[in-house]
Length: 77
Image 1: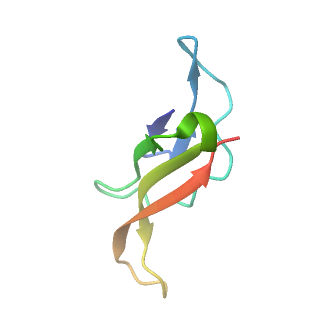
Image 2: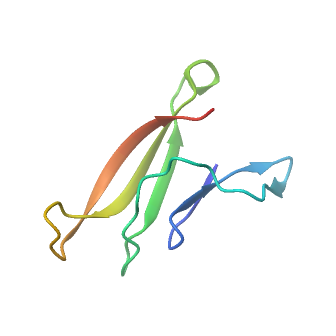
């Protein structure tokens, strides 16, 4: 799994090749300045539970111009 920071997409490289379609279900990302889809980390027991953690930049609630860093957890199926 790799992130594309400014595109806000999560991609899969399998057997040395980038798969054509990005992973579905990635949160909306605010790709401004240094922001975007940042890190991806697999849970230590990923082989069993398929959990993945993402850090990303997101617009603040309420519609202001502020951006913050958030963490999300999801299951890779």
